Image 1 (cartoon, rainbow, N blue to C red):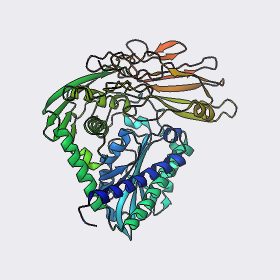
Image 2: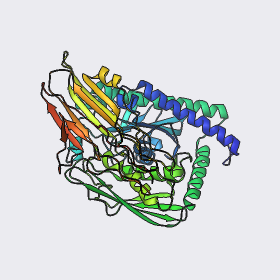
Image 3: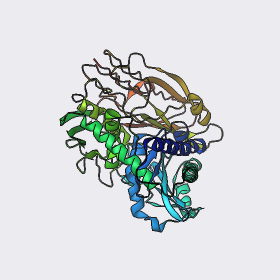
Image 4: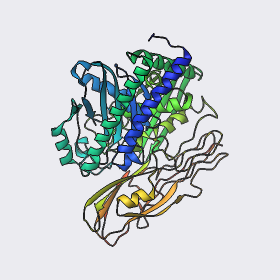
Amino acid sequence: MTQTLDPITLEVLWNRLLSVVNEQQVTLMRTAFSTVVRESQDLACGVFDTRGYMIAQSLTGTPGHINAMATGVRHFLQAYPPETLQPGDVLITNDPWQTAGQINDMTVLTPVFKDARLIAYFASTCHAPDIGGHIFSGEAREVYEEGLRIPITKLFIRDEPNAELFKILRANVRTPNETIGDLYAQTSSNAVGARELLHFMDEFGLDSIDPLANEIITRSERAMRQAIRALPNGRYENESWSDGYDEPIQIKVTVTVEDEDLYIDFAGSSPQSSRGINVVLNYTHAYASFAIKAAVSPEIPHNEGAFRPVHVTAPPGCILNCLEPAAVASRHSIGHFLPGVIFGALAPAMPGKLIACGADPIWISVWQGKWPVSQETFTFSLFQCGGTGARATKDGLHTTGFPSGVAGVPAEILESLTPLIQHRRELRTDSGGPGTYRGGLGQWTEVSYRGEASWGVSALVDRTHFSATGLEGGKSGTLGEFLVNNIIRPQPRRLYPSYRVIASNSIRLEVVGMVIRSGVPWS
């Protein structure tokens, strides 16, 4: 195949390639053991060329996973150069500083061989239901407390499972069947992607995927640079606040547009925390680069080329570029603020085009206890979303995850897989900020345990002290509330993104307004 493709051929090949990664994703969701992957779709799937450049991603995928995976594959290639890999090898890591920013996120990479030549890679990243250590929360003071950290290593060796690694995993997690089952699902989905890629290459007579990757990446980069060039050059600033843990966290951003390059710097943001709300630079880059693509040219194919004109920096040791061994489990509670604060900075350069701040961080509650009869342990992660901010010409979306993109969990799933009952789940009236276009509504939920044994919940919540702000005169949205037995938690001046309670058999725990807010409108 030549280096330059005509537009019609390229479009055919591009759509065929997308069908390959979408089949990879469908396989992952249908074979996953955990509701986090199967229902909430907290995952990412992608195909990479021999240099580790992402060519395409699947239909869905959270920015914190897909973008972090896109920049993180280079670490795999450094640890295991192509000449060290053989057919049937599968690599894994959950190192926060190399991939998606927390050890609950497992990245699995599979090299693809054609006639004994390595011709591509398939990767997936998923949030594991458990990884040991502290129950998933922001409570830890070092990453070592947060669970099992796996350096880049082989999960499978020439199609044989790495038995020693699986033994270590099984001994260190609370839900071994689900956690290990998801790893097999990731491996299987990568294998399906590899199989379909080889079929695709045979169908079109391709000996290598790299020339096609070059064409796709080059065109995406060119289109992104053209979109940035349409913005007025200048320096744009904004700031936002998170509830933080023991104290509020300030996020400051400076966005500089210089012709066809765009620079995002988070200097001035709060220093890294002593608790698990810190963000690694890879995750910061993921949500910052996503924000620019969503703002200036969302239709551009998402790949290596779309990242190249966007440059992201943050001072080492700040909340958005934490240094080891900082605790990072609840990094989303800060990282999900980044698109909103960037949009606020760019608003003067793009009037009437951007979305206002919304609920931003998803609310995650991790429920743990025993089944009433069998006394078997259960652990369940529930993801819930507030509304998005108002759009330039429309109201915001109700209870929709942005920027995370995760889906909600049906009450039927919660009640069939755990001894929990969801008594209430409804839209929170008037929780979206007022304006010409209103923010989307948040939701009220109420959950209790139907047995008599002790149980607990680790709740990662935010925007209970700092509401989402509007754009162009739009008003702020409603604050979130987290209640235990009708008492608001956390108490005033105790700003915890993670609240854990162990309830006795006579206490019902209520989580109300489980995902605060909605969005903020335009004036």
